[in-house]
Length: 208
Image 1: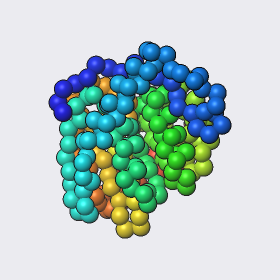
Image 2: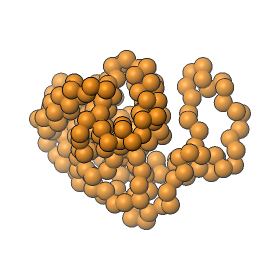
Image 3: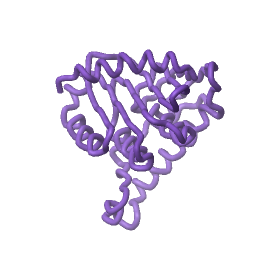
Image 4: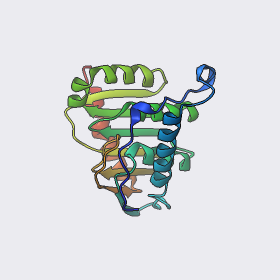
């Protein structure tokens, strides 16, 4: 659990395709891509094991991320365990292209789920090509908002039902790194609504 894996080479991993796009993929991956994909799948399995049980209402779970996977992988393994999830809000300093691919995968599967992604203005301004591409990919789905602001917050809000919600608070950004990161998981609708209020306000103020 506490053994850090070497950094992943995201550039070698092809974007998964859905629907009609899948027919344009080559029939077999190259050995390098296959090895990178296998490594990424192992990291995803470790991420899934971080939260063997989600907190019940009013409970809090504290966890330590080991640096062998990223926060987005924790999110993508949590969402399937919340079949009634209505809205996913994410505040992060930065993200990677792979993260965007994973979020698109969630949106492709979870029809009707809303997504709000708030990132730092610093990330947008220093990764303009990536941010423009991400905007095109994500906003192609209905009920998606992508915005940038002067923020350093790392929060994930899961709007599960009218009277049920969950929050991730921690030090990790969406994308991977080799650092230890703390993560606290709250099943607390009041905390969820409080975070959602400032996230939505900052998103509404984004001037692009």
